Length: 397
Image (cartoon, rainbow, N blue to C red; front, side, top):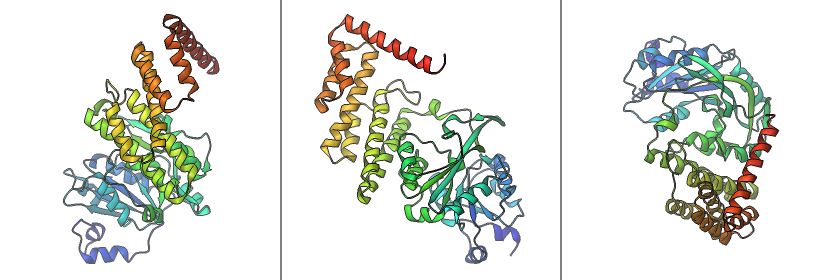
């Protein structure tokens, strides 16, 4: 058997190849590098891994039956830590991720797309040192920079979650992560035993599977954040915001909504009352932004009230909780119509909100001002101007 054959673990691999690989001592870190039509960028990713000061690792190049020369690029590596896994037929991105995680033998698993790369040669060493010292840490991640046309951009704003290195209690982090995905996917190192406990990427969540996993894993452990941008995330010319169709936008919103509901179900089963409440607040905010805001380049909100109700009844078995969510969504919709000068519709929605929760003081005030007609409109305009001036003052403008 040649060295190339020993490194090439195909979807139709022979038992002998499998035995040769698994007879080796498991590495500390397994890198899973999914690759489809990214052969021209694969080398930069793999080279950044092999250049790490921490060398006890393996690199699984997960070639998803790519029609380009991914196989040739992978086979050019003579380092025995690099293993080429070619799927035949194509599995699709989520199944490819999961296959890589299943094949990984390391104590820790790092999934990084072939078009991204490690920016600092010591990032693995720093991660492993902290995770070895603290068995409670479920995963580590760091800030990152974007890459456009081969040039690094400033640090990605959403990845700058703290101004210093920190180990963050899992439930505290989960409360933040439920509302918005703050983890740069290319930067995450996860304990493999937690993948075994929690499962890998859910196949019915193609748009937000990583977001869901970062939330789920935080339910069972703490997270380590490194403030230095040590990973590069390649930003492609056509952003998701500009390219999503209506159907795709609805699917993306559906994934976002499913995340806190699924975490809430696990929290309820485990008796984590505070996490359950955090999930309810988070899903309310997600419903608000998908029913009252224009997102992903759409000219209208993604969810109408009918689809909102369908989703609510699908996930929520408590009428009390449904009314709690309805009250805030109706209020957000009322504000949308209020700002657009559609007073009648705004008033109707404010009334509907107060019927579900009569103790919403701000909504009571907004509805009362609407009833004053032009005079109320002047007061609302002055109030909005004062809030804007206050915001400018606080920012130093």
